[in-house]
Image (cartoon, rainbow, N blue to C red; front, side, top):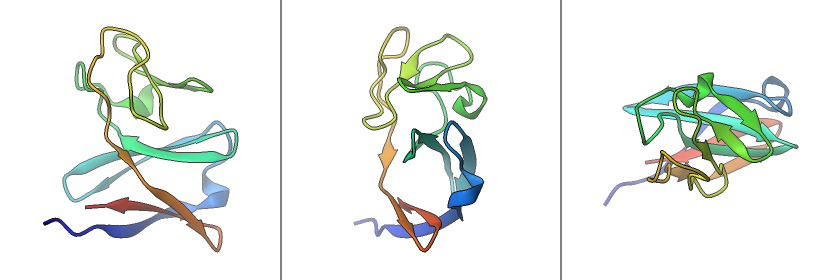
Length: 105
């Protein structure tokens, strides 16, 4: 059984609306994104072709892969169009005292 841990990533002032931050925790590459004030965390690497989504385009629909233009819903991780078919892993996010935390295993 894997234990989860809340990891402090950044302050809320560092992730403004429309911004993305990438970070690594152990072997995980994670993307943190702010869409209209809601913060999401997902795996950072596209499930189709190993592209880094931190270099992609963030919109209200999600993050679009810079390589083949699949867009992933950040709430669910589900790709919204081909060629990607496999969802991204999503992570729980909490904000406490103006700090953003992500729950990782």
